[in-house]
Structures are given as structure tokens and as C-alpha cells.
Length: 453
Ligand SMILES: Nc1ncnc2c1ncn2[C@@H]1O[C@H](COP(=O)(O)OP(=O)(O)OP(=O)(O)O)[C@@H](O)[C@H]1O
Ligand SMILES: [Mg+2]
Image (tube, rainbow, N blue to C red; front, side):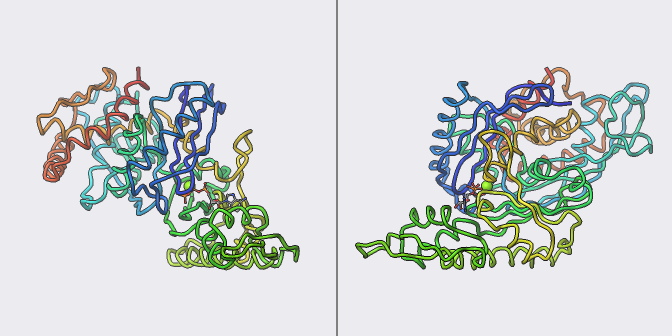
């Protein structure tokens, strides 16, 4: 089921913040407004200065409000792949009254049982992805609701991420005066937008060449199998140009975009003027020379990525490599990637009006992903809220209100889940973080409630 309504996506990049306001009308995403505004307080894809990032987000949101002619209250933000971990999980609950039909709350409970994990203290769950449900031993069920059984199991994956990154993202969004409706894992969403069905099925690598970092993801069998970040991107190419040609970063960026090639052999011998620091007259520089500088850095970034993919045995994918991200806008990038990885490569550029630049792929993916989540995906994600809300309940804090339809009915929940929850709650209480967790999930809780209303 597609979730009809307005979606506001937020992609906080190192170089720029992108916002899309889109409307989903019966599965059709209509982009109402899109902005790309300078970023601040972000280093190598991660928020490092909350106040600066919040100001930059606010400016971008103001611009998006004007463009789309709407007031923006809440946003869905992407979370970068830095130190994300994907782990297979399995959960089971007993349904005491085997004669009643499985309901929303049972799906939440089984997902909750699956995602209760002994995580390192610096990690937390960012997504719960059900693969299949098993009702009394019958497997391969995508949606168990409405079925009857005494034992409900779930197989799937959880994605965990560093608390610092999630906390900084949440704080920056809140300080910008917005509610964080949901967090979407960037590389999970990206594959679903930039790869076709066959590519997602047979296996393909996505490569998002950003400004501060390059994000790699391995998608196979429609699942995100592996993702990692190489902490260099287009910004490093610009810095090299600036240093080698002795020109300002601004000039370097402009000439890179105007004259640069990813492969120096493809560049002509044509020259162009460069304003050099300490010289009154511009210096003539050839496209070939400029492209040699560009190629050297890109080659280094891509070679590092290749080594990492080789290490995990994920280099040879039938779908090859699909490249996107702002730095992929440089002519010749596909050829360079093909040469280095010795596999097929193609460039993805969104084809919607106003988005025809590879820098917009990620933000488009965030809103696409959010709007196409089905009921079961949403309920599974709700289990994160349920787990965290139990912390508040145990610590005598006022719990976040739940919608009547997905109201917890603990007498129905198995003792197995209950005991897991107690352990989890104690651990979390030790961390003394219940207040921040509660506030972190308040936006998501509201969103679930709205969705099921
Ligand atoms: N035409 C172009 N030719 C070469 N590089 C380009 C071009 N257009 C944009 N870029 C580069 O793309 C980068 C910005 O891309 P993008 O917007 O995807 O990054 P970001 O999302 O802000 O950063 P990150 O994802 O690393 O946090 C910049 O380094 C910029 O120089
Ligand atoms: Mg980016």
C-alpha cells in the first residue's frame, strides 16, 4: 500500500542540504518543490556542529516552504551509512488465545522480540526489516495479520547505527524547529530508487559519490547486504585542484565543473584562464592538466573502494555498478569506474523535472522509500518505538500516547517477549538515556499514530 499524502524529505550532505516536498497520489510521486542549499556543520557526511547544521537546515526549509508554498512541520531525514551494521534477526512470540486473528500489535511484538539485541553501548537500532513471518510453522508469509495461530515468528534484519550520528541528526532537526517524522537509511533507500527490479534481484553495487564521502552499498535479492563509506568525495578533488593550480576553492570548484573530465585522455588540449593567487594575470591551463588532477584523486577513491569490496567478496555483481551523487556528474565517470573495477558501470540521474542532477538521487530515494513503506514495514519499525517506550514506562516517565488501534495489550504478549524487554530496559536504564530516547521517538510515534488513524 502506498501512503498517500505530502512527504518532505531531508538529505543533509557535506556540500549541500537537499529538500524535496512531494505528494503521493495513488503511488504516483509528484514533486511539488525541491531545493539545494549550502550545508554547514557537516564533515564527511556527518553532522559535527549541531547549531551550524540546524541553521543551514532552517534556511533550506524556508526556501522549500517558499518553493512549494506550504508550511513544513515535519521531515523524513536520511541517515548516512557510516558504521551501519546489518544483522539477521529472528523473533518468536506465543499468542495465548489461538482462536483470535493475528493483529497489528502481534506484528509489533514479534518484531520487537526479534530486534531486542545486546548492542554495543554506542550503537542503536535504526531500522527493523522483516523478511518473512512464520505462523505455526508455515513460512514465507509476508503479512500474517488476519491469520490464526498460536506461534508467530519473524525472520528479518536489523540495521544498527552509531548513537552519536543519530543524536546529532535528531538534535539538528529539532533545533531547526522541525519534527523528525522518520529516519531512513540512505543506502537502503537509494538502491530501491536507482536500481531496477532485476538489478536489485541479481545483485548490484551502488556508488554515491558525494562531496565529503563516497557511499557504497551491495544490493542482492532485493536486500541491502553490505554498506560502507569511503571518507573522500568530490570536495577532495576540488581541494587538489585548488592546491595544484594555486587558486581559491571557489575557482577550483567552478573550473572542475566547467572543464573537468574523469579521464584525462578524454580531455582536449584546449586551455582556459585560471586566477592564480599572487598573480595579476590569469594563467592559461589545459583541460588535460586539470583532468589529470581530477583523475588521480578519483582513481584513489575508487581503488580504495575496490579493495574493500574485494575484501568482502562483493566485487563481481551481475548488475555491475550504478553510480550517482553530485561528484558523478563529471563527464567520463562511467568509463573510469569500468576501467578500475573491470565491470559494467552506469550513471543514474533522476529524470523528474528540477531533479536532473545525480546530486538529487539520494533525496528522491528518501521520499520514495518513505512513501512506499507498507503496513508491515511500518509496524516492524514501530517495534523500535515500542522497545524504547518500555524504557519510559519502567522509569516512571509518562509514555508516549499510542493510537487505539495499535494499543499495547500486554496480557496478550508472550512472557518470552516480556522477559527480554525487562533485560533491555534495565540495560538502557543503566545508560540513563530514557529521556532522550523518548524524545527521539516522539516524532516517529506521532507518525505511526497518524498513519493508522
Ligand atoms: N558537474 C559537476 N562536475 C563535477 N563535480 C560536480 C559537478 N556537480 C557537482 N559536483 C560535485 O558534487 C559534490 C556534491 O555532491 P552531493 O550533493 O551528492 O554531495 P553531498 O550530499 O553534499 O555530500 P555527502 O554525500 O558526501 O555528504 C561536490 O563535491 C561537487 O563538486
Ligand atoms: Mg550525499
